[in-house]
Image (cartoon, rainbow, N blue to C red; front, side, top):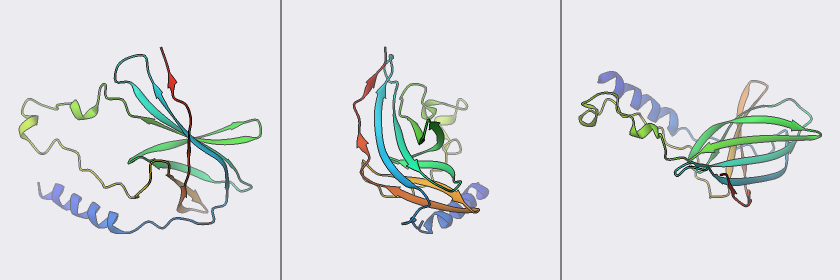
Length: 154
């Protein structure tokens, strides 16, 4: 129990440090949008974020923060376009929160995950990209993401 308390306090101090956003990144965003999707079964849905960019230098894109969630970024190249994609699964089916580890789990606080607070205050159409350049981690805020029409899958 003491180790859990110590871990929680350590994480609290680490997250207290404010994260500074880069104002002049080594890349240029040419288009940014997001699209909701709904699967063929009840409770299956998500949001995909697409960011087109140009850059003359090599950049290691890591993750994206959007609507109080964080996911790893995928980098794709289609002809001359460079695209970053974040796949956010917002499904309610098979949620990890519903998983009980043992019979007495409902009476025990030890099975609850420690939640680290979301490090940014963002509007609904804003995201933050985490990237590394020259072994330095940086963050860049993308504003005014365009909402595209939702996709409905059978």
